[in-house]
Length: 238
Ligand code: ADP
Ligand code: MG
Image (cartoon, rainbow, N blue to C red; front, side, top):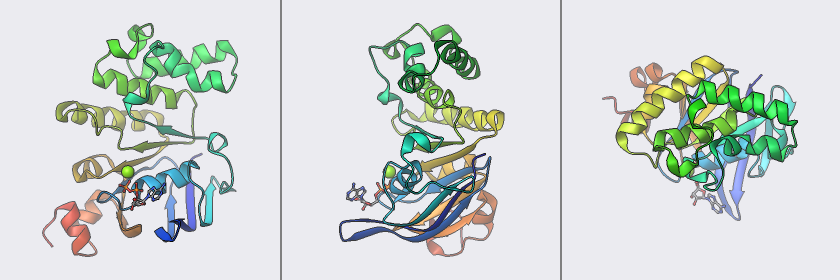
């Protein structure tokens, strides 16, 4: 569960085509990073996959099923927002449980899933606290917990670490990579940070002005960048 296919997907805002026809396959269980400069369409592409934006044309399939016109909550994907999207007046437990309460899940099942996510994220001792009583890293873990409890087919991250300081960012990168190893679930991670892309990805998708410049493993891109843009962006001397 968690194979995502984009077939000739385009997106325009008014007259402006932000994503020209684009084909992409994300394999089940893969950690894929979308990387590219600011404004190149990374967030738009992620939001199309999540269903937060409608495609202008083309098709999105999730595990073989046409998801193009399926609303976001029914795609079985979970978007991880930055930690500042937490509810300050709610406990950690209530923050993590929030999407399940919205879905009117049975309370015993909610408790089981929240306790499971808290254990995976080392938050068990913090469930009764409020976000304001946590460190930046712990707050980010709560935001991830809110995605885990939904047991999604894929996690979608949009620059989740960009408001953390440099040291914390390095730690959280490792934590997210560890989480990926443990859950073996598809993850799509958007960043403009080349180091993040090179250290976290199984597969990197390099974007420029909505076009895919190259897709490959970090080593592929490092050894054989297809053009000067990729070489310059990845930082290898071609
Ligand atoms: P990135 O995440 O790579 O920085 P975005 O996907 O946010 O880039 O934006 C890609 C382009 O689409 C930019 O030129 C941006 O101004 C434009 N764009 C994004 N969202 C909208 C919108 N809702 N309306 C109009 N233009 C938009
Ligand atoms: Mg963005």
